[in-house]
Each structure stands twice: as C-alpha cells, then as structure tokens.
Length: 197
Image (cartoon, rainbow, N blue to C red; front, side, top):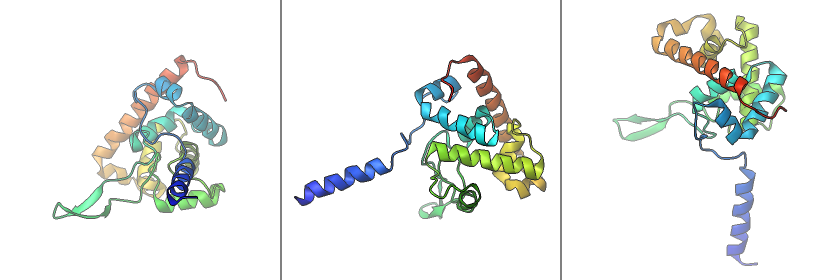
C-alpha cells in the first residue's frame, strides 16, 4: 500500500472521529424553531438534558447562545502583550457551553461522563443541566430563572452567593438579555411543530 493511500485513510478516519456535526453556528439565531429544525440533534440533546436535570430547553438554548452563539469549538480570544505578542487565551473556556477546564473535570467526575466532550452538543447540554441543578441546590435558583442561572453560571456558585455580579453592571445587563432571549425562545418553541423525543 502506498504512503499516500495510507495517509488518506488515516485522514478520513480522524475526520470521522471528530464528528459531532458542524462546528459553525446555525443560520438564524433569533428563531428557536429554525435552529431546532436545522439541527434536530440539538433538540434531542436539550430534551434529554431537560428530562435528566429539569432545566428547560429554552433556558439551555439562551445560555448557549450567550456563551458560544452555538459554535461547537468556540474559545475565548487571545491575550496580547504590547498589542502584538500572543500570551495565550483569556481563559480555558471551550465549546458550546464555554465550560472551564476545572469545572468540566468536576462534571466528568460527578456526572459519570468521563468520555464527554465540550464540543459535542449532547455533552454540553448535559453539562449545563448538571451545573444549573447545582445552582438550584446551592443558591436556590429556579431552573426556569434564566437571568439568575446565567449570573451563577458566569460568576460560579460561590461568586453568586457573594453577589460579585453587583460590581459588574455590564454582566447584570447581559443576564437580563439572556432572560429575554429565553422568554423569546420559549414562546417560539411553544408555537413550532417539533418532533418529541
């Protein structure tokens, strides 16, 4: 077998392993029905997480929209010294849910999902359900309360308990927008015909 042919087979195999669907965002991010019809695997993942953890589909979707705009391999921007020398990324946040390395590792241990990946929508949705359920347990935040769930998601449950967000008016505004998007998505989902899993 030629080296070129072997290299081609290996490349095809590696490409198929990366699978989880497209890493680019859906076309119309302001319409939940369009998103879920374009990417039925999203709806299946969100419904599965909702059944397991109780976090509604529209809350998951609004949070993922804010965190990654539904881009599977989203990362934080690079930091630069003197404006030109890259010094690494702003944080270890990665994937649909923008989970940090340490929080993701905690999830893998606690939820028993040791092979989960942040760039897979079903794993990201399950992570989000797990995290928001912890926020309810630790801080009494309702699973339908997208605004406060987002504040706890962004600041961590300890930060939320300390109300660190009060010194960040921009973050309070972002959380308010997450709630508005969740409400919009909820109304859209109620009116569109989606296959139930």
